[in-house]
Length: 332
Image (tube, rainbow, N blue to C red):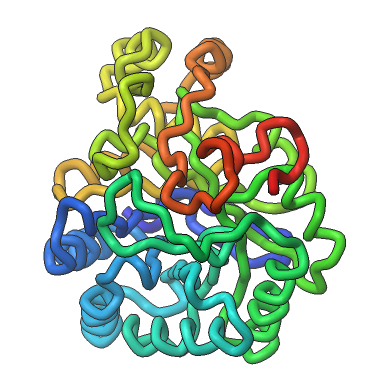
């Protein structure tokens, strides 16, 4: 299926597949289950994989990449591999150390994109409760972030990464840092699904030449329990999504993915089930939604953020919303 997967071109001319596979499943699935799904996905035609050190499975995924490359299933230049520096390795010299471990675990000489996972040096224990707080957490600082970004830029100079990216940013934060970047981000990971469309942030990225990467593109029904609240909406139950699914004879999940792709984002859905991850890939190919259906899906937006990030709050923050600068300026 690889020949039919849509491609996009980043501002620097690098090509990137138009759909990928996420690998965060550590709250529900073992590293062995996730890596087995990656192996099946490569055979099925996926070429973009979204990894991260904090997911705790890069070593097993690396064995899958090595086997696929050595057996000739895929060539290295056909793969586009993401990884990310975790929040506890933003300090001087630590970004390179983080990447070195990632490259060792993934058994690669370079990654195609390396992200600052969250724009704060705030972290939590894996699998912690949603009420957990680290007393050392701090609000966003432009100077602190740029010290981390300078290390990211150095990785490009060293040819250890092809592209660098940001994640979980807001327009005020981007406005603060982009003018200071020597190498601007080529990609930005953002939560995006029909019930949370982030039109202002999406349009801002496009205007800046930054490719949006949509995580939770299906509304993440299997997200960690700490990230679920009674007020959350279910994307695949929205009438606009169901109407398009019925019209095309497809699952509502395929509608969510077609919507993201046709909008201009690159979705990175995750599943360990072969029938699901292959269906996700097929959703990227052919049978587009109509203009009327795309227009109707705008009405599905409920401004429903699912990954609220409350475990990263600092002392003095009022609520999880402070992480996202709701009033148009950086909260401190």
